Length: 173
Image (cartoon, rainbow, N blue to C red; front, side, top):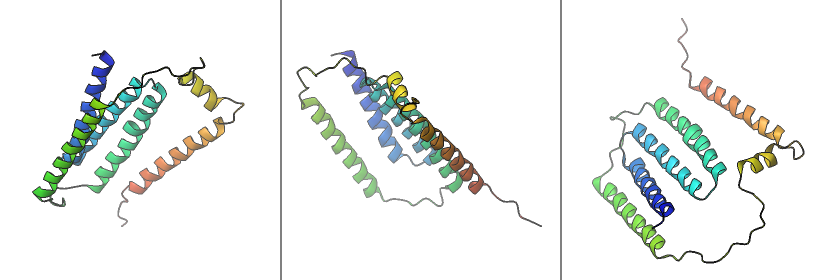
């Protein structure tokens, strides 16, 4: 068995396990941490596909920005054990059964699928490198630099607005 296939199976197992723990965990902070681990393992899959830029963007956007927003939301909601809705055991049993069935189906599909045998047409041009993508996105001739900067300013303003909205006001005397 090739080392890449072993790495794929390990990453797939980590992805499935952390996704299951994200759903099954009772503590919302633990669920968020499991989701971050799931995102990192998915970024590992992107690296196996030789999509370095997509892996880095996935880590920055999902594991960084989105998960920080999730954690802020969880902290602002101030979830307590008393407020938590208790689900019956049959619901948990159904979730576990569904997870096991879907995981088994996916494993069987991957085990019995036939890989593509043949040659891909190649032009010799590099379309996946970060250098090429950066040149296309941020080159002065294409004009994507200004919209990129506007998006940065828009995200900064949204972050400042979220902080101001979540800030508790002091009572006036």
